[in-house]
Image (cartoon, rainbow, N blue to C red; front, side, top):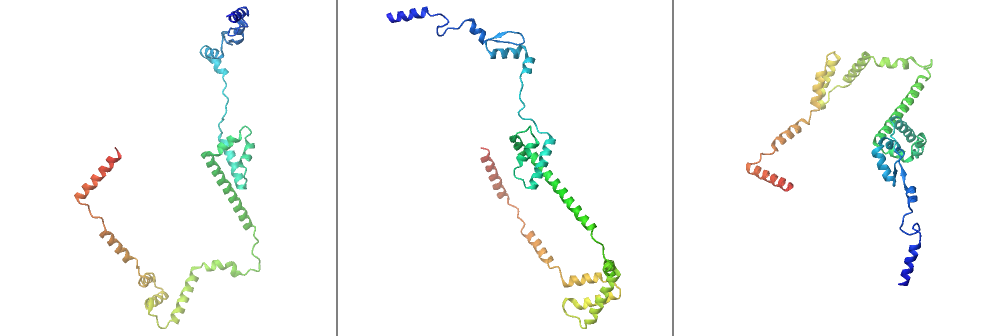
Length: 272
């Protein structure tokens, strides 16, 4: 009991500011209070000040809030430039494409460049750039080849006139007809007795009429049909007749009812 009385007396003699659990008076309130910059009202917490400014000073509060632009959209010009650069790198066989593209856009991060390269629209731009570069390279190569052909040396004076004028003479149809007539005449003179195969007698007659100046086109077509008949016509007709025979017969009414009942049961089981 004496100890308890001593503790009570010591607590009563201690100053109020040093007692545990007691506030420091108006000094602590002044330290923890915040003032509204628009109307000079005082609030005990920053949350209370924020609520007050949102309600009473909305415009000033919105101007003070700055949302950082973390992701800035890529423009069409940037995408085309990067696609063309990547296409050039791929044609050259470079491996570190990201390291080549990154210096072109100093305000972009490596992750941003990688993300754009994974997009489908960007991949389409790269394919277009590859086709354009391949087309331009092919046209450049063809122009170089045509330049080589134009710059080829002309024919020498020692070239024969037959080599220079040969194609024009060979293209003359009258000379070709005369050659054919001469070949047919030689063959008829050598063939004393016509052979038995391939209707040789008819072919010999056609050759003689052709030498006399008659048109033997239809006769030649008939001779070809006699020698090489169309053997595929008969099997085709037989296949068509077999298809007609194997047509599906119509189901009886009893079988149709069974099919309809089975279909109904199947639909009922699905919708249970």
